[in-house]
Amino acid sequence: MDYKKDDIIEMRATGQMSRRQFNAYMASLGAVAVTIPLMPGAAHAAADDHPNVFTWEGWDVVEHHQQYLDKYGELPNFAIFGDEEEAFAKIKAGAQYDVTHPCSYKVEIWRDAGILQPIDTSRLSHWDDVIPSLKEIPGMVHEGQRYFVPADWGQTSVMYRPDLVDPSYLENETWGILWDERYSGRLSMSDSLIDGVMVAAIYGGAANPFDMTDAEVEKTRELLREQLPLLRYYWTSPTDIENSMAAGELVATSAWNDAFTSLKNQGYDVKYMQPKEGAMTWVCGFCLMSAADPEKLEKSYDVIDAFLSPDSGQFEILEEGYGHANQKAFDLVTDDDLAQRGLSRDADAVLNSGIFQVPIKNEAVLQAMFEEVKAGL
Image (cartoon, rainbow, N blue to C red; front, side):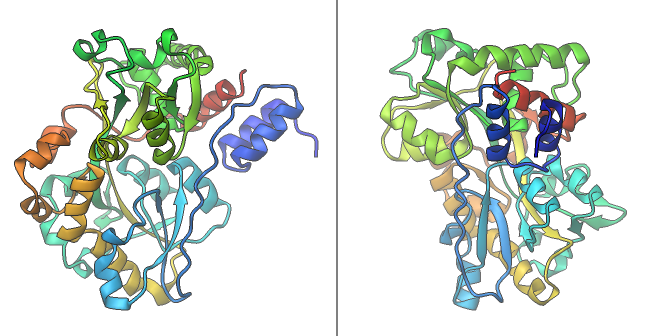
């Protein structure tokens, strides 16, 4: 079928077209398509009577689900998404999951789209141990019903190789390193509206990156255009940037805490910035889908409960470098463990130190803009 450029951009922005289809169509029109690493797509098949869990790369490891494994002898089924936009597009296209793992800024949008069902926290044995302030994130309770169980928290910032960049960055940490022309071809940025476009908006000085004026949107667009030829690739998998940083192919990239912690644990000399413009902070967690199989509902609650266990939290802190929702998990680590990972026993101290993610206004417009930039338009 023949499509016009605007039709293609609209279909990608609204989830009617995959990233691969989008690039193919844009290439057929003569536009330059960006090489984007493929979504990991790893799914772990288990018995059909276990729930389907749609989550991030790395959250499917057995250490987060040992309590479930001990109870049922098998793990749930997993499918992996690269970001929430991709997850939402797949769900709206008909993919059915029982449990998903978005970050809090998406919950109101997903709830309004009718794809979530309320959660009965009395069915979670670890709910009383969840850090109280994480239960109070605005928008997670609607008309007396809860739609989100916080699970983990952290930052989006810059990971860099201090041995490969100008030493001045050690004293002047800034998102600007991701626009430094001296490192052309050795930089990377998240292929994500929240961790890509919003980063550019923060660097550009938008007063509220989640509700930009028209002028701020245009400034963000220009920054993304300036950055495009400097990037080695847009990333969707933390493993890709870990490997590239270890090999020295990248000198700096946007990153979450886990990539930094993984490389530090392997002995690599990497640093995780506190950029002067502000890091981005977030809380992610679990939702029950409205299309969830009622026959798997008890096991779906057990998936969430297992992730909330203190042992799961200890693993998340030590091996992935994220904060965990269960305050008892922090009894299993030392102050030195936390300091090495830039964490604190006070979740609010970390979350309030940066720019906390909230729902994005004009998402469709910004997503379309981002797709245009990536296509070289």
